[in-house]
Image (tube, rainbow, N blue to C red):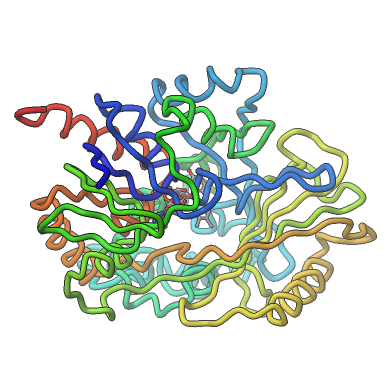
Length: 423
Ligand SMILES: Cc1cc2nc3c(=O)[nH]c(=O)nc-3n(C[C@H](O)[C@H](O)[C@H](O)COP(=O)(O)OP(=O)(O)OC[C@H]3O[C@@H](n4cnc5c(N)ncnc54)[C@H](O)[C@@H]3O)c2cc1C
């Protein structure tokens, strides 16, 4: 039987970052698909460059950004001051909605403003939905925060933890909101973003270079793990490991290790992404737009062509579905037709013709972070770690995070194992 010190399950950004950091060459990445990168993929079609879904990057750690960008070449990566907006009742509102209610028609503005003074934001909230109403009031919550997030998460927001979006949620208190009426300060965690000319896959290649190709086994799926014997069975062989680093969805890992778990604890949404290429330019400058209205099929769209100043509209469009929704080819054709109709209705597409398209279903896309999932993941991670199995990454940690967060977590896990007694 083959033996490795580190068996890395999944060849996405997280495990590529782990492989770069760990002080051992005795490792093997098993990736079920025919290329590494996970959700960080790029499609090049008919002159358009698309990702699986808009993947824009906001680095807080300069050393991580430098490691990636120096390989890609600084001239090949654009840093852009983001222009993100909300389309609401035929109006364009700057993001975030809660700080820009003064841009709403007068009566709607008053509803939102009065709502802000009716709240009790000192009371602790029990769940995400309650938090929205308690912090932002009825006007803002009913118009944007609740419908937008329901379209995205495809679930009842009262089932989610108060902190389900972590640092990605743009909080603002009444004072900040009112000051913003005169002095616009819409800065958020992603006020600027970077994007490589060749698409998100460039960041993957920048990390992949640290791992020799004979240490990456493509089309190899880990099917079963015997925790007590530390043996993984794949579709090709059995592998004995000292440590396994898994980035596959946490509930899938529990399934292949045979650990008992309550299935109802783990829920998530699916996101259907359409990448659309048109023959002419569309709206200028804007990078992405949020759509809270329930009669619009998508919740967000983004424009690749406004990053590099291309002369043909190139978009991604995202639609949220519950995990148990079976999405057939007919559903996809119907959804694409509806998306094109909605884009026209919203004035995004006028006389442009669709000349190229692509779609992908991301499943899971956004995990539902609940009190139960937080507790269960922590308890089961401890059990797994006692057998040398570490579950990390966006889906391995069952969390909401960026690729930079994935790299930080992978590096911390590698450092912990590098520094372990006997390492
Ligand atoms: C809609 C959407 C938009 C996003 N936008 C951004 C963004 O703008 N900026 C940003 O920084 N992040 C963004 N993200 C997050 C980003 O995609 C993830 O954080 C990142 O890709 C997670 O990497 P990972 O390696 O942890 O997991 P994954 O990318 O999921 O990789 C896991 C890998 O495991 C493989 N695998 C699964 N099962 C097995 C098995 N049994 N055996 C072997 N291999 C297996 C899979 O094929 C996959 O390659 C977005 C995510 C979504 C869903």
